[in-house]
Image (cartoon, rainbow, N blue to C red; front, top):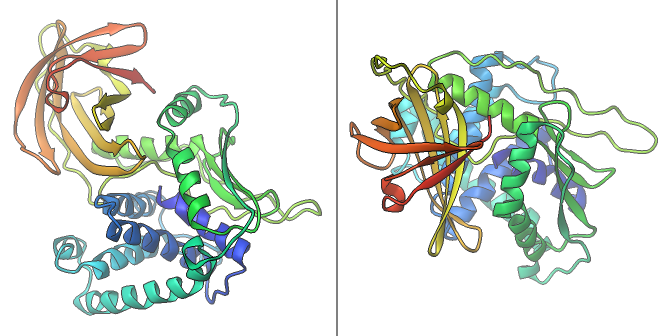
Length: 384
């Protein structure tokens, strides 16, 4: 989500003709981070997890791809990671002191982060506030969402999920309500043929590619398995200027709502049972559970060597995410029983173990007895 707001920053700079100094990629990184921090102050208490995911993406890219060429319009990935971490720390030093120490953020920089956060918040408020409906501004523009027909299996799965949970439709409604836009803007989700996302000022579109989501998911999976991320694609440059359109800005791949940047511990696999691992369980799975006034979104990667990684989000009916946690551990799947051992849970108990019945039907995996839904069966859809 951080990169969506990054592209939104490019969009608003063009739409409102905002004056900026310095490299625009740095400026919209600031905008994305500070917007989410402001949302946290307004009640989205778990927004810092989205920020950590934004930072985590650049952390993984830096470990994977090394330094960005000095002449590129995008800053070095570790610099971007450090800047996002700095704003997060500056917003609440006591709360994020452990995180700053973990990544060895220098003490002098920590002090400067507190000042930078206050200065940047004030600067962005002065730039953007005159264009908000709260300040009395008006404009004919609306934000719309368009789902182009997905060609890939992964894109089809993600498109179905986004259409169902209406995440981007809700964001479009909020942005239309908050900003007095001078023209219509379209959020486009599609298969692009390359892992990328960008703002196209000629078409007035924020383009999000399913290949980018797959790219990030693959990096997360390899990290959970203890492997060094090795992408099978490189983000392509945006199309060159033509008489019909303006140049597109193409930063880095687009992730989904996101985990903490520090590497998760690599779980040790359980001993292989005599009957052998049920290979059908291996893969990437997703489930959504409507549970009263909230909806749980669960994303799980089951590795072939008995390791797993899970991400669980809690969403209100108004489209606001109110909770988020991650879990890693090891598992065995044999004879219709799934034995799960929790090694790390970012919000709950650790070093727990349980056995859960499971069954397959077509392309879905149903697990019974999971504590998050009071033991009711949960059906997961395979996304890879």
